[in-house]
Amino acid sequence: MTMPRTFQRPDNLPNDIPIYNITARDADADLILKVTALATKKSAVIPTYKKVVSDLIPNYFGEIFKEGKNFNESRLEKDEYFECKIPNLIEPKLFAEILNNLQRDEAFGRGINARNYDQVYHIANFFGIERLLGALRRLT
Image (cartoon, rainbow, N blue to C red):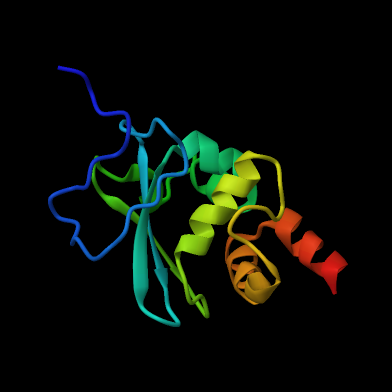
């Protein structure tokens, strides 16, 4: 029996909450982000890896998962969600698009355009993503 390549929906995750995969092989993801857009109460799940998000967003995840730190979030049990409730955000899928773009070393790319720059700002501000904040400043 072969192991699935992508993250499988947990039994405790309602079917109306989408899963956004940001990597092709995330079946053994060690971090399950549950992103809630507080402006709409929409949620989404993003399976990923602590090392990946720590490298992509060092001001937030890098600090939480840094060796020797003892945040409650860094001690999640398997299948527990790391909850991110982002103020003023409308669509949680945008955070998955940002993670995809950051992995490709792009500030803006697939899934992001001028009509959602305000949403990008809310995400970048929440997580302290200086690269995106700087890119948004250059656009204005």
